[in-house]
Amino acid sequence: MNEQESRPSGSNPKEINSKQGHLFIISAPSGGGKTTLSKAVVNRFNDIFYSVSYTTRSPRNGEQDGVDYYFIQKKDFEKRIENGHWAEWAEVHGNYYGTSAEFLDKGLDSGHDMLLDIDVQGTIQILGRYPDSVTIFIMPPSLETLRKRLEMRRTESRATIERRLLNAENEMAQKGLYRHVIVNDELSVSIEKLIAIIEKYRYPNKPKK
Ligand code: ADP
Ligand code: 5GP
Image 1 (spheres, protein in one colour):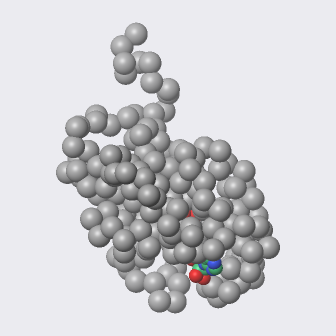
Image 2 (cartoon, rainbow, N blue to C red):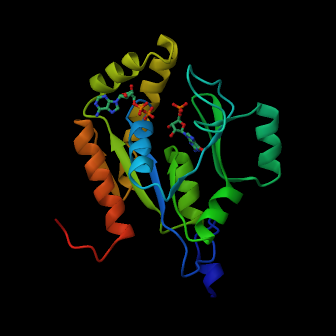
């Protein structure tokens, strides 16, 4: 059996070139803190490329097209499914979300480290394409804390919060798929834990503090 045939069905790993960048994937239930933590990573390492996802959901107050997400219409998203535009895509809380294959592949192939903030379904798809991805799951300290953080963020209606909390339990049950898990209690501690994980892969020869 050749190498191609021995791969699990449905996966299509990309050819690895020696200078390929690291791919870091962060997931968390909604309100778990992945946006806050991803921003901290990008602030710390200005040479890590953050992949701006595409979504069909409406922008929240203060969200900017092309910065937080590319906000597109459902028809456009579905056309891009047919065209093979997505490295991964999923329906989350009733909306589509996806990662551009071209942006991801070009970034990695040119040696850049990339950061994705995507859900569990998307992570499984990316692992089929990039099995060496470094996967990190962010856990809230408890469901009560998660609810409070979602309420305090004031971006969602009550019904949307309930829907997100239901999905949260489902997502948290799958944290075992991830290489690293961080419980996001004290924010500054979580940021340092995340930075330490990323540094471990970027600078494997750096002496430990
Ligand atoms: P996500 O992107 O996973 O939906 P956010 O990063 O938007 O989550 O975080 C949800 C809310 O919780 C935000 O208002 C954020 O400021 C707050 N938050 C995130 N992490 C912490 C933390 N460790 N302690 C307190 N509040 C936090
Ligand atoms: P939100 O609407 O709160 O910004 O995100 C909702 C969920 O969609 C989160 O779990 C987030 O990680 C996920 N998400 C955001 N972008 C993507 C993406 O490109 N692909 C996938 N699969 N999930 C995404």
